[in-house]
Amino acid sequence: MQVRVGKVGGRAAVAAALAVLLGGCAEAADDDGKTSASASAGAEGAAGDNGKKAAAADRGGTVGPAGSACELPVSFGIAKDWKPKSIDADKELSQVSEGEDGGNGEDGDLAGELAEALLRQGPVTAACEIDAKPSGNIGFLRVWKGRPGDADAGGVLRAFVAAEKDVDKAEYHSFKTGGGVAAVEVEYLKTNKLLEETKEESAFAVGTPDGPVVLHLGGLDTREHEEMLPAYDLAKRTLTLS
Image 1 (cartoon, rainbow, N blue to C red):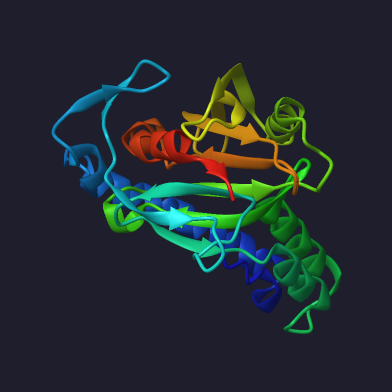
Image 2 (spheres, rainbow, N blue to C red):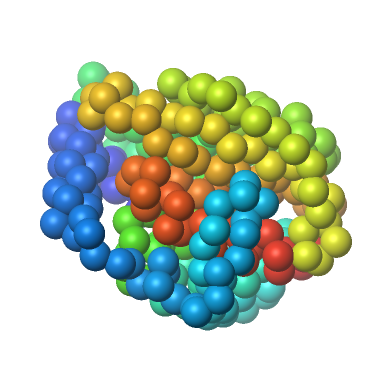
């Protein structure tokens, strides 16, 4: 997630973000009726924790360990063809605050607000973005990190959801990852008032000695979200502490 809002100014950044969003909608509409790569991967159906059937995701690599695309307090498998990218939130926010294009005033304030909204949510900061587009879906599995000492996974996850706007029907439950790490998961509905659409989203949190970690799966819409669930379930099955 390269947030270059500082280069183009606040209004331009908002317009660009909106264009990307609307462009994604058009792409999804063009692909409607086609089977996505992740949805068709694997011949055996497996029921996820939410009771929905989905094909098991083929593992394409690991993020988290030293030397991987994203060095994190946790390690987990990522689905085949999904592309991870590390996020240096402090650097991105610093660039915006410095105003690389010399922007200031109202535009600068809008740019800062947009960057803050993209890179921070409640008590956690964006650390890694795993892009599903190369596999045929529109969406990301994002990893967020909290500060050392904030190890209450349930509390951090609730604060993460509370910081998101227009959320409804959040349901929480506890589980253990395949690597034996205690975790708390939430499934909820998020409404985009601009598009007048409501979609499903999922996230889970774990505590680590280096602070809490949240993994969040969104998606352009509920259909995309459901097709990407195998990759999310792969992370749950394989997550361990780094």
